[in-house]
Image (cartoon, rainbow, N blue to C red; front, side, top):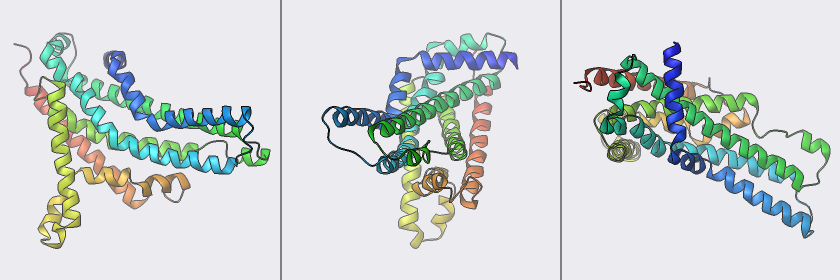
Length: 290
């Protein structure tokens, strides 16, 4: 266990030390950053130029809606960054011989895959927490920007309750764990992160495009297509990260235990287990040490 923890920290340090990691954190949190800058500019103008007052409740709702949009956008663009991060962690290390050096140390191959996966998930958690922190800062700026009743401000101290935030974080981890497993399988066949990311993302988009076409056209032509579409694992991400799911959890009209959400979450975990089992099998058979 100590060796595995050391390996996880080593892999996490490698991810965070790359310059592109900072770019990823910025890109994944572009909405909170833009909102924070916009509110700061508004704060300066309203206080120095005397433009009047704004309603705190209006700004609160705006920030809350931004949170929903941010979470949805995060789910849409995170696969592009996951592909490159996973590609760097596996494909690039195969091409440059780093993987061979790593396997010369007393670590098992399952520990390598586990450590790299956990490191990627920790990176995603950091990105999610940064977005939440920035949006919470936006809320504090909104408080400073308005002169609303103290009781009104006290009633909305946080954009998301702790329970809702935890559920959304779980959904993000489950959905992205499935996608990470998918990318790891592809990364074992390439020695270039760019080529791996391009190929894996192309196949991923083809799978999702097929599912979209089936749901909107082919299902009415031949029921057989609907059975084939059930194997399009991307459909579970659609459910987990839909506006209905995010808004429902924020408004507490839905929870992670809601039947539809739970089914998609369990299916995503099953797909993740399958991808990691395939990745471990391929990795264990791959000739790295000669």
